[in-house]
Length: 365
Image 1 (cartoon, rainbow, N blue to C red):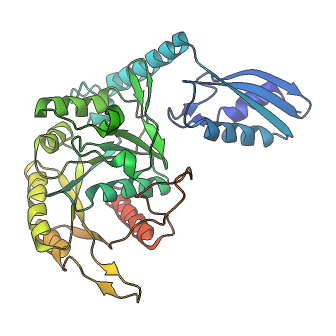
Image 2: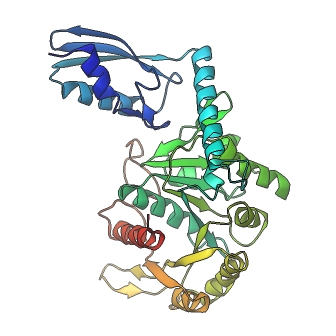
């Protein structure tokens, strides 16, 4: 027999994808009505037009059908301003409680930055632009999520933000009072300056303002529990890269280069900066390693050996060599469309999956 109590019990395992909290815990399930094997209920979203409404509906319907219901009718509503304010206060209190628990004195910004934090930070760096650093960042993040990890990514390349576009993200983060809920895409929580810039306008800011924005990405964003937080750094060794090294001393780092000797030479500076600031280098990723022509032959259009030479110079592992390519084209209307994310079955996608497994083995997560 289907009862209200059983419905609430099964829905306690259904989470809001953005907040990563149970719909029942968030008081989003209301007005449950049962008529034999037919169930109807209201799901009250944080905001009208929530981009993940369809996902929530599918999860709710599946959970209730598993109880034996033949028909499930889900009606959607939105929280009032007062309810959103109360939820924002709850999220802020949780962050403050977490900070009180760690009580390490390391950071007053976010419990994520405490020495007691269980989140592994991985900065993705390069010596120069145009080597595919952001492509590596987003695909590694998605590959880690496919391995069952809780993953976030910060597009810290504040001048040259590209992560939202590369991941096919069109919606903006939900803002509840002063708390920002990161966009969830392919199982990865995403935060970028691109969400706050109109019509791809240029960012004309000086260094201190960039650093403040980066800190806001920690203090004002509700990340929840994360295994990994990746930071797509701007190329080179400028203000933002330096802020990251100072703000997150426990961060590990991956250096991205191409096989070209000059690119590898310049990338060595980013590696030297990591070593100078006592960041652990996980290794080197060589991107655009070769191009496979129609005959299946490898053509080394950017030369050979740059990644291996850089890894040897930095005394770290060459983690992966990624060929030139592009994800399979999809209909832009497909909800799973993205310009830069490789399918797990794609040959290059499988390389990223092996890279993610190496990162997990290196970090012991």
